[in-house]
Length: 489
Image (spheres, helix red, strand yellow):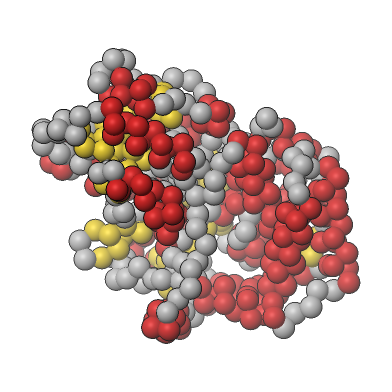
C-alpha cells in the first residue's frame, strides 16, 4: 500500500504549479490537494470519510438559516478589529446554556475588544447562543461566492488549465483512481475557480473595514480556503492557523514534498504560522509554515477542575471513541466487547466522530439495540470525565484522555500504525485484546503529558500577538513553558 510519502512524489518536480487561474494567478493545486491526497489514502487503507454531507432543510429551518446569515453578516457593525478568526462551527461545544468554541473562544476572550470571530454554520444550522461575542456568519461570504460563480464563465485559458492539471494528475498521480473520480475533481476545481472573483471582492472589502493585523483560519492548510491567506498576505496581514485536531507525519494537510515546501509561490497559499498544542505535535509536521508551540487552552482550563468532575466508583465505564475511518470494524469490536464483559460490572459508551452524527443510525444502529449507549454530547471532555477507560481509533481524543489520567488504548490497524509509530498507547486488534487491556492484563503507559499538551497557553498567545502586531517574526520557542497539563511519568 502507498504511504503519504509515496503520494507526495507528485509535488517533487513542481509541475503542479504550472496550472493557475487567471484571477490573481491563483494556483489550482491547493484547492484540490488535500481532497485528492486524502481520498487516495482512504482508498489505499479501506477507510470511510468521517464527515456527512449537508441534508435537506425544512422550510422553517431554511428561513432560520437565511435570517441568521443575513442578521450576522460580517459587514454588520464592522468596526476595526486587530484579530479576526475564521472558524468552523463544528468546534462548538455546549456548556450550560451557550455554545463555546473549544478552539477559538479562550483566545478570543483574552483580547475580547480586539477580536472578531467569523464562523461557519454546521450543515446550515447555527449553534446559538454563543458564549463569545461578536460572532459573525462566514456563510454570507460563501453564498456571495456561489452567486458569483453562477454569473461567471471561465476563460478559455482557465478551462485549458483545469483540463491540463487533471490530465497531468491522471497520468502521474501514484494512486490509480477511476476516471469518474477525476471528472468530479475537475468539476470541483471549475466551481472553486468561478467563485474566486466574487470572494476576492468580499474579503478585500472586509479587510478594508476590519483592518486586522492577524487572521486565523481553521483548517486553513487543507487549501480549500487558501485564498484567505493569499489575499490577507497581499494586504500585509499576518496569517496563522491553530491546531484543531490530529496532526501526524501522515496527514496531507500538514506535510508537503520538500520541493513544494520551498516554493515561495506556494507559500502564499498557506499560513505564515502554524500554532501547535505542544512540542510533540510540532514534530509531526513538514510544511513551509513555521510550527510554534502555543498550547491547548480548552484542555488546560478544563483539566484544572477535572478531579471534581470524575465519575464516582461503580461500574467501569469504557468510552469507545470513533475517528470515523473504520466504522464497521470499530462497531464490530464494540459489539463483541459487550458480549465479553459482564453488564453488571461494565458499561460501554460509544462516541461517534462529530462528522458522523448525521450517519449514526446508518452506521451504529445495532450498537444502541445491544445496550451500548451512543454518546452524542457535544463536549468530549465531559464524556472522558465520566469514563474510567478510553479506547478507539488513533485520534486527538486519545491524546486528550491522557491529560485526564485515564488508561488509553488504541486500535491497532495498518493506518493507525502508519500515523503514529512507537509505544504511546497499548494497542488492540479485536475485542478479546481490548478486554484483556481493560482487565489490567497489560502495563498502562503514561507518557509525558506536558510534552504533548503545553499548558502555558496564555503567556504564549500574548507574546505571539504582541510580536505579530509589532511586525516582528515570533520566535520559534515563544515563551518557555512554566508547567505541564496533568503531569506525566
